[in-house]
Length: 208
Ligand SMILES: [Fe+2]
Image (cartoon, helix red, strand yellow):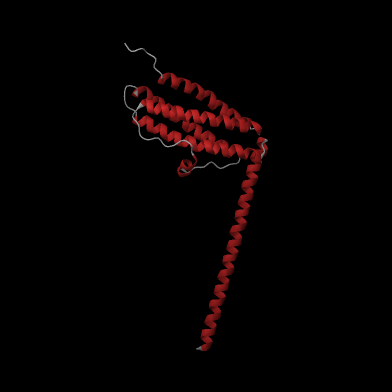
C-alpha cells in the first residue's frame, strides 16, 4: 500500500512538472510569435513609408492628428443623419436632401482619413465608444428646427476648418504633400459650403 502511494505521488509529480514545462514552452512559443508578428508589422510599415519617402517618426504626428479628425467626422456623420431624419417645416425638402448630401460626403471623408492613417503606418480607430471619448464634436440632440440644425452644422464646420488648417501645417512641416493636398481639398470645399450655408440662413428681406 505504501509503495502504491509513493508510485502515485511520483506519477502525479511527473505529470505536474511536465504540464509546467508544456506551459512554459507554450508561453515561449506565443512570445516568439508575437515578436515575429510585431517585427513583420514594423517591416511592413517601414516598407510602405520607404516607398513613400516619408520618415516614420515624423509622420506619426500627422497620423495622430488625423485620428482626431476621424473621431470628429464619425460623430458629425451621426449628427447629420439625425438632422436629415428629424427636420420639419417649410425648409424640409431643401434641408432633408442637403443633409443627405452632407452625410454622404462625410462618410467618404471618414474613409479617406482612415486610409491615410494606414498609409502613414497607423491603425485607424474603429470603435464608436472611442470616437465619443476623443471627438471635440458632441452628439446632437434630436431637433426638427432647420435653424438649430444649420447653426450646429456651421459651428462644426468652423471647428473642422480650424483643425484641418493645423493638420495641413503639420503635414507641410514633414513633407507629407498628400495629406497637405487632402486637407487643402477639404478646406476649399468647406469654405464654399460655409458661405452657402450662411447665405441660406440669412434673410434680409424687408417685411411688408
Ligand atoms: Fe434618407
